[in-house]
Length: 435
Image 1 (cartoon, rainbow, N blue to C red):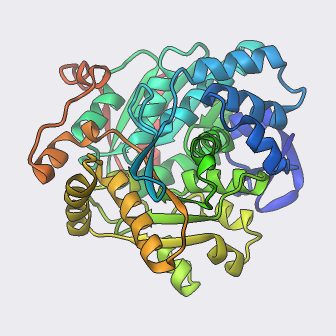
Image 2: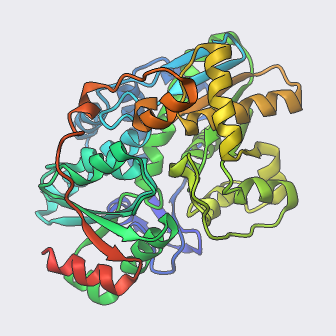
């Protein structure tokens, strides 16, 4: 398999180049070519397997002979020692796909752990250290930090917006040490993301360090996220109803992953893009006008993105055709008051404790069901464990939330981060001083 830039489909690179270089020099986004069209029968044949086995089979289809079957099998089973269960709220109609059973309690464990295993494989083969740069609005950083911690041949630098992540999210970013370095940026997630993007096109910096990204701009963060859409399909297909996925969305990598496996043949009837007040894509879906704007801080901080990096990739998957996009995706957004009311109502109605992001996904699904009147099996992606937002969830619901031990042990560890202004030169200077 080769990979081309969305800005220049004529030039392709290898899987290894796309993995480590992350972003093409023309600032496009890598896409696989050819994207294999596997068909429904293929997915029916694997959808009932474990997440690791689904990942292995799809990886074989993508990599071909690039990586041996034995190495791919070891890689995927090392990455996914957990499952992603579908839990019914209203049987046959409203359910959640729980993606928080990995070590950092967030969906981004799936992409981060797969990338870590893949990068370790290539780094060991090439005897070369790689330096990961990643911007986070919340969960990405924790998943990357835990997924890459002490991985041989990999160093990680995480940029996060000061005061805009939860306490436990910050602990995940800043307490591991070792090969993980956190940069606390006096600015927004968009500022962090802009710094990372500038670093990748800085010729001087790239001459000094072998840079790569673990953000969703990296195609190998997206590819494994498609695996759990397949797993979800396998868990509900016996209902014999069209399937609609509602995806809480910020940078739109998660929804792009779903669209990618849909294009490969997974029978998905529709997607719902559910966001907070950063409503760029829902507005585009209603008006046809794509207008990025500065991000707004909300309770669902992992979705506080004003210029979604993966929007060009998602649009590209639908042929850069507005009508096709709207046929496949609907959008809904909610403010903080609506989010808190939704969390309370979901607990009262379904007896389900949802983090603010998951609540927005469920609300988006319910809104689509009410609007469309279609008889479908709706699956909202539960993207993070509610304990990651313990103070908020407890305040809204009026009851305690148990913190899983793998998160609780971080609470008393000392924070270690480098505070920098939201300026590229300040980051570059600080980064080079850490080496």
